[in-house]
Image (spheres, rainbow, N blue to C red):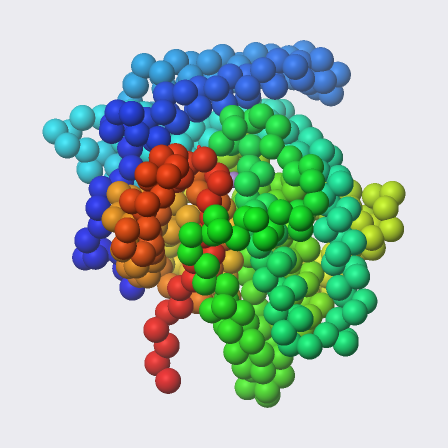
Length: 448
Ligand SMILES: O=P(O)(O)OC[C@H]1O[C@](O)(CO)[C@@H](O)[C@@H]1O
Ligand SMILES: [Mn+2]
């Protein structure tokens, strides 16, 4: 179903002064740009070593491009069309025109006047333009260091996670369905809270996981505002034996969010799903360019598996070896599609990325990790908190889907009447402080 015709509230935007969007555009985005510029500066000698004078000049040009961008942002200049001739350049420019058509009084699309989702995505795409326009910088991931650090600083937590996983797999044959379900719920929650560890909300500050991820689960339960885990479990169980031959063939898709600790929680969860026979195939979806500071690219995905394999810890390396094996035999696969790094709401996908939409339709269950995916699922709009999740999806229902998200932006739907008011009185920043989470499920209406 297309989004068109289904009414929706207005988009969150920095034009609402004092809003979280406003504060993000005013404070957080320039800080991120400054860090990117610093990273390029710090790597100056490396660029010279690798590419000689050409590298130094490219670095200088990229820095001046980004400084100009930061200035344009801070002074609310109109956003400019992209000129880098990449695969997605035209789509971006068409989308800018779409935003232009939505502007009141024909004012130009600009940082503080246009939808937050659009301008924030645009900033990350412009960082990429700075690199694309200045080869040999075009392969450089300005966020790589932070992602690597987040993984390395979470070693203790990763060890306990891998140890738990390997013990679980060893005992799996003797487990009752109730025990299996219990482990499923635990690992689902670990993956959920793994989403606390993104780097963009903290503008790149350390956000790793230092303690055992299991110890805190019982205490965190009360912070899960919507918990549809039971429906997720039933969907997986019902997908068993759904093949025409009655064979188990369930396919699960995981739309990844952040590298570092969160990615490990996702890999552990995915390993559990396969080892427990709940899924036969897992398709991971990542970003094709560095995105929102900590999001997973193919390089991060492969690096994480290699690094886990090479760890000097029995259960970590056993896990890594198993994951590598899953990739090799096709049980797991990694996919990137340019749609994930476009600014579109997901309700546009059926029309604007029909190939991706139809691929997702082949899934038995899709997990969407993290806050940005939630913003795109709901269109990043000013929904009433009691609006049902299905309604906020505005027709985006390729397959049963589940959002695993800690709240870091002021959009939240599917709450009970009075729930938001109560939260606001107890904790005014409940929508943005990352303390709360949702496990929110939706399934398309299927004709029998
Ligand atoms: O990694 P996540 O969970 O998608 O979070 C990305 C973050 O970036 C933001 O878009 C803010 O810049 C928030 O919505 C969110 O905190
Ligand atoms: Mn992210």
